Structures are given as structure tokens and as C-alpha cells.
Length: 122
Image (cartoon, rainbow, N blue to C red; front, side):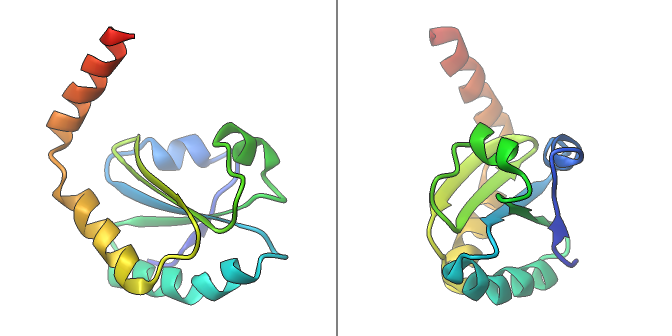
């Protein structure tokens, strides 16, 4: 599956669905963002069951502000609508594969239960 451009109009629909979403926050002027693109594109071809989305912070400043994206590139992983991982910087192909492996290995029933417990403690 090729990567998809995500904007504020389709963001919620894409990330709230069941399954894994990997987001690449980037900008045209960001050199490391451009060098990460081939790694990101290759992963999108290697893992067709995962949605890989690119968000241009220049076109989508409201989304970038809502997620407090301050450094580029930033990579986020969501599963079943829950944010599980966020990292600023350019991950290697091996690091991206390890992230995907770990996100897939999670027991989402346990994660959801933990989220409920944390919310009731607040």
C-alpha cells in the first residue's frame, strides 16, 4: 500500500479505524524528512495491512499544534485509534520494523484496560 497524504478533513477517519497507522510528520524544507521518505515508502509496500500516512505540517498547522509536533521528522504509531508511540528524529529501516513488530505484538485488550485504569485515577 502506498503512503497517503493526511489532512485535518480525513485525519480522524483514518486514525480512528481498527488497525495500525504509522504517521510521518514532515515539511518540504526538512532534509531529514526527505531522507526518511524511501524508508517510509518501502515499509508501506512491505506492510500492506498498515496505513502509512504523511502529514505536511506547513499545510496542516492545526494538526501539528494539536499533537505538539515540534521537531521533524516525527513518527507516530497508533493502533485501534490509540496513540502508542511518538518519536522525533529519523528512524532507520530496522528501527521502523522493530516499532511495527512491537505495535503488532501488543494485546490491545490489555492496553485499553490500562487506559481506563489510568483515566479513573485522574
